Every structure is written in C-alpha cells, then in structure tokens.
Image 1: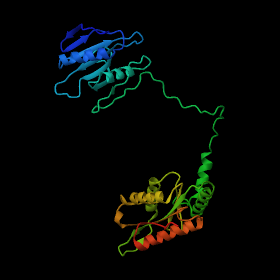
Image 2: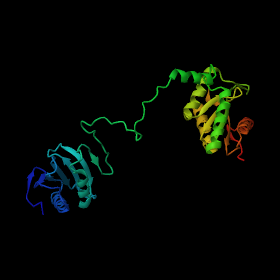
Image 3: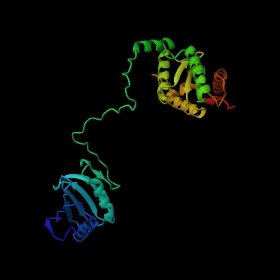
Image 4: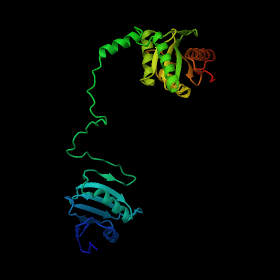
Length: 321
C-alpha cells in the first residue's frame, strides 16, 4: 500500500511517511491503528498531491475515556498552528475518507474551518481577496434605465388622501380602499378583511373619553407597526378607526386584531396612562367569509364593534354567512 510502516517520532507526535496522493482507506486504517497503539499521542499523516499546491496533514489521536472513536483533524499546512479544515470523532475510516475527498478538491479554496462534531461550533472565515458580490443581471435583455420617480408629486398625492393633523387616511379614502379591494376580489377572488376599532380612555366614573391628539398619534403608530405596509389605517365615523387588510382571510384578520391589542396594551400610551384604563374594542368582517358586498362588509364590521362594546369582549368577529 502507499503508506509503509516507517515513521518518525517527535515528542508526543508520531509522523508517518508523506504520501504523494490523497490517502485511501488502507492509509487511514493504518493511521488509526497507530493511534490505538500510542494512546494520547498525535499520529500525523501528511500528503501532497501533484495536482494540489497545498500540503495536508491529518492528525489522529485516541483520548482515554472517549467511546466515540479517535479524533481526526485535517490541517492545510504542516505547522501545528496551520489552518484547521475540519475536526471529527469517528471510528469509520470510510467517513473520514469522504470528508477528505470533499475538502481536498484542488479547485476549492482552503480557507474555512468546518467542525463536524455535534457538540462543537462551526466557524467560517471569509475568503481572502474575494471580490464584492455582483448584482444579479436581469434575464430580460435590453431593458431601458429606470424612470426617476417624482417623490414630491407622490408625497403631494399622499397628503391629499390623509387628514391634516392626524396624518391618517381620511374617511373618503377609506371608502376608496374598500371599493378597490372589492373590485380586486371580483377579478381575482382574493379575500380581504375590515377591522373597525375604537380606542378610548376610561374615566373614574366609568365613562370613556376620546384620546387626545398626542395619544392618537401613539395609537396609530403602534397599529401600523403591528401590521404590514400594505394595510391601510383610516378614519371612519369619528372616533372610530378602520383598517383595510388586503389579501387577508377572516382568521388572519382576527390574528392581526390580537396583535394590535397586544401592541396597544403592552405599555402605557403616554405618561400616567395605565394600560388597564385603555378601552379597546374591535369588530371584524371579511369578503367572502362574511359577505360579498362592500356596503354590507362595513355594516357587519360596525355591528361586530357594537357587540364588542356591549359584551365587553375586546375583539368580535361578525358571524360568517
């Protein structure tokens, strides 16, 4: 076989003859047998293939009390502090051979440490002199350069859709969103949902007052953070708020309402505002789970809100038809 029994010793290390090819299973079995004969010693098996510029060293050792087999460590270089490519504990020389084959491909950059032991952490080092990642090229050839978007014009349109002072979409915009999503449903059969909510502050006599503007800003911010960018928070019949949820089933709308409740009641909405004094009521309806008419959808969500206030249940879903 390529590896003969001659070896040299240096301290606790036993160095086997250097091979001119990647070791085969017989070489690994021999190294493992030498490790078994010299417990605690490090058996070194070096090789350098003609197709590789790198000298590899496989170090194998048996530790007392280890029932998982010998410990194998592959280095790229002959020095003791050379780069570690992987480390593994196994009595299976065929597994070790497959790990060596995977690591010693001459086309592969030897710059990573891969520890296959289950109790050890894997660390990957960056490749040296690696060029920055290139942006993927479009599969569509000859595309024109993008048109510049007029941000000022877009912001002007947004302002026209929102109420001055609160920054929320106006009630008129709310109706527009409902009709838009209903039209989308008619064309694509995609569901959408509507959440109508009231948030107020309980007074000492049990009455509920409307939140001041600064608290309303905090409420709207938390609602929008709990949702998605495509959800639309709008005014609806003051002091109610409405959330139009595109592409959302009634069950998903219920989950969204619970996330909003958690976001509003987790911490005070302002200095001195105990979350337990915040009144939060929600009604939910959906197309097509509840109905297939935009006006009925709004009426159903509104009715569910009123039921929420009467029954002291914070979130009420209108019965499905």
